[in-house]
Image (cartoon, rainbow, N blue to C red; front, side, top):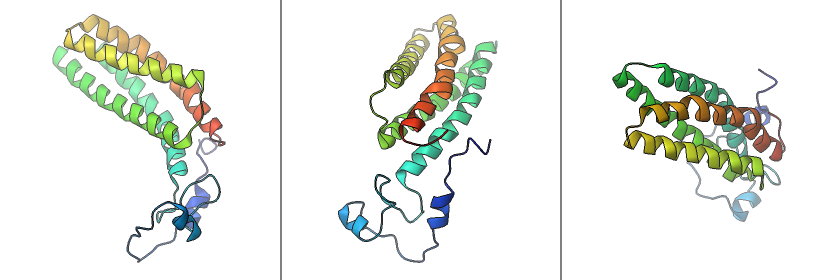
Length: 176
């Protein structure tokens, strides 16, 4: 697991405790000239010692682990026979999917992996599944909703974990 962990140690070493008030210097050229930079292409260096790029990479690593838990949630929703409990689990699943979707979107925006058909297809597929889940819930189509959760959503999440997230990380010039 340590091999999978993204190397954030240099950022941690750079972070020094500060008693100064937070600065409003910004992230533009003035900030870079003032030494608030982590080098070319890495964005501004913040008081925490982490750049947005490092946070995005750490987020992707965490999402890979989180996807395993969400796949387990999908199985629980699909297997639950009590309609009240199944609905509660389904709402929790939707919250988890929102976290994944936002984390992926923000990481892609920060890391700018470029145009990749695989990533675009995975993102479109995930959004389509989410839309279909909401429509099936509104139409009270429990069987269709469970099929979406148990088959299509699980497949998409596993594809994100196995190929989508590593592709974003690789395009950013890092290792998974």
